[in-house]
Image 1 (cartoon, one colour):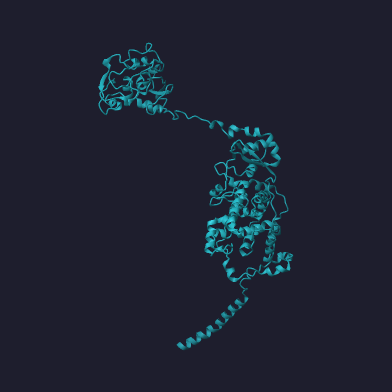
Image 2 (spheres, rainbow, N blue to C red):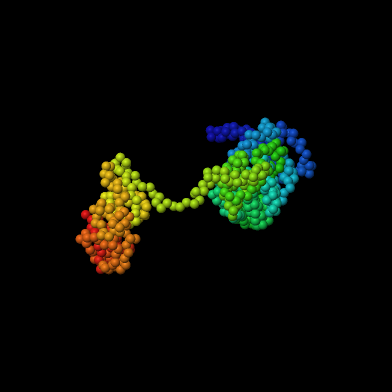
Length: 592
């Protein structure tokens, strides 16, 4: 039975094995040769018209790129540069001049034609790249082809916008590059850096058309502060970028390596060169570079191709409303862009796009530090004629001159307000010789309350200061005239002894006993000479105290209810509380 079962199963599976082997061999025979699968680009029938392009015969051999299998396997799109088109290109649509151009543009662009986007064989791309005048090696391979597709197929609308902006920005870049001897074709670096968006900001914090980090921008002399960021200035930033590129080329003597270093820094390029065994060709150190830098040079080559051959891909430029002809005015006084816009009757959004470096629309110009303001060329004469009017237009609104010079208030804290239905509010004006203790005694309130109501610190009050005193509702009538009394009258009103000599009869303003009204030697003896104001009229009202070692006026005052150190100092003609000496006899007038 076992033998019969094995024979039966073998007879059953034999035809199936033959069928499977036949299928596998047929599939292998139908497979394309490795290396030709990606290099031979099929052209759909609707695009057959483009097959008639006049390609020279010598270039026909390049229709199938002879890329070795080992190299073909190495170049993958893994870790390629994450194009900034997603953020920077899309953010272009928020700019005023782009919105304006998209609204008003009337050109021959036909969106329906995009349904037949042309494609070309590799030989055409090779021929076109070779035709671009460039000192930078414009190598072509599958990686470059993929980036060309990004610009010519996936981002066609953004390409139209960048082509329109190029009419304004590229002449600026070329004039600066000519000054430093930088190849003109490096202007296309701004396309992959920022999509020609001067307000572009990367996730790492790089800013502007040329994507400068803060430290690099400051190193190359760009002004960066709360009001001005010259990384956004197309002119100033291009000067810095040109100097940076010249420095990098001086290191590597190769523009493609300089471009890689512009993206990831010279340190990372140096590491890649060392790890590759000293090779100095971008494609030979490709996989030793950081992932985000590997696609940087291919993206630059693709952007250069797309900006030169956009018409062959049926991409037309969207004319931007940004004026192509401008003039620059040097300003030596602070001015707001809204002042210029209001007087010249130009949109403030247009001025912002022409002067993106001014973060808050403020041009903080001075005689020592003038700043440029770019305006449409046709407004130059009007600006010069109306410059004074521009600077003075609503200047108090945009520049509050009162804030430039201000003196701090001596007392800035607010007083405490008590409920008006429960308390009457009285006012007292401080006079020479007054102190917190006296005033509290005259109004029958606690000194701590007086300090709290008027936010008084350390009993410091000044002559002329107006103090607030609160009395319970209906009990303030008796104190209404205290503010009009002289010192002697107030003392008698409070039931206190009045010194025998009070100037001219104790009239208002006769002084009070204060350190400034008292002259004495402060010699520390009981017989010290004191002013008449300090002499008691009735010695029975006072007690004497002999100072002991370690005593202070504050400690002495604590021993007598209702007495504070100011009272003791005033009655004894002491201008310095630390001037008392052991054995000195001082007078004290207890209260209550």
